[in-house]
Length: 32
Image (cartoon, rainbow, N blue to C red; front, side, top):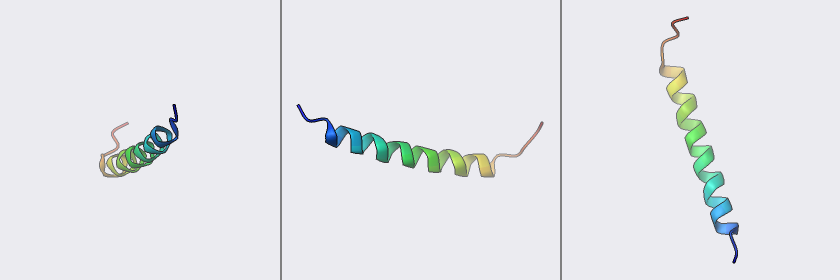
């Protein structure tokens, strides 16, 4: 079995999620 495609898919998903998280954190107000 070759999971190379799954590995690439996971990397892509991780990058996309990280970008979304970063943008959300940028928008979110800082109350500390």
